[in-house]
Image 1 (cartoon, rainbow, N blue to C red):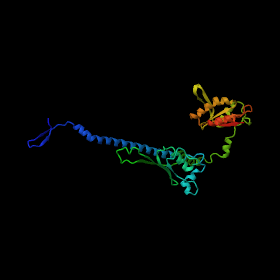
Image 2 (image 1 turned 90 degrees about the vertical axis):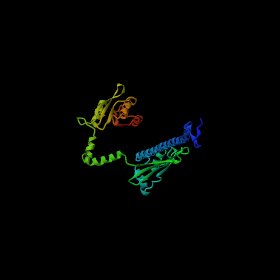
Image 3 (image 1 turned 120 degrees about the vertical axis):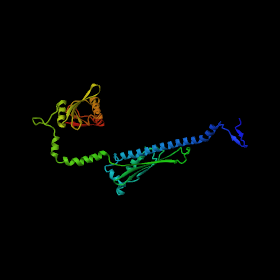
Image 4 (image 1 turned 45 degrees about the vertical axis):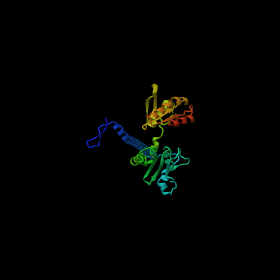
Length: 326
């Protein structure tokens, strides 16, 4: 059938034949749909990378500010004075470069100290593909860390959204404050020092540390491990405690004082036995938080020698203090 026919007035008329219309419509709309999908994917990638960059900036600022007041062995006793307000307006020296440009490399350069070292410690942990800076804004009583990061958006050239920026930028701020423990310590000292001042004289404190005497007035003589344990309980005011260990074993603490410190008495011993049996038990008590500290008391009676330097070193590494009674 011919789709075209002439009307009574001699004009052509298009009949109601719709064959090929779907193909024609699809060819017209498909490019726009593809562009819309690509634009949505590109925008999603941009937002995702921006969120990751902002999270990195926030974490860097917060963690650096959190650990800022943690002093290390190389800072000295008065490191706060030389650091504050660009070393107090330059009068005390110090100060120096208070801004680090990224990327900073993988390690902190040798000889770096002070503010620059703390900024570098944060900078070296960031990926090398991130540019920007980490700086300290010091206003004497107000210190703030500014972290500005930027990274190229590599998919921009392939994106139909040519309006997207070529580089992603994000920043974060974090205020440096003193640790909570310092605030609590200052408040405790300020509140309770006047309350306890004068209640215990130096003479009373010295007398409280005197060793107990026998009933006949003579000095105490330790002749056995049982007497050594009893002596420790009198001196420390502690009590004997027993704690179960693994495999049905137990650990007897000779004297556990009111501060949670375990005192152990040794009158006769061999160092291999102490290292293999006694030391692991007390180290576990410390590790599990059952006691706050452990002190080993060695009673030297002329037959048993003092603990060797090797044994002392082993105990110190495990956090155990040593006291020798002669």
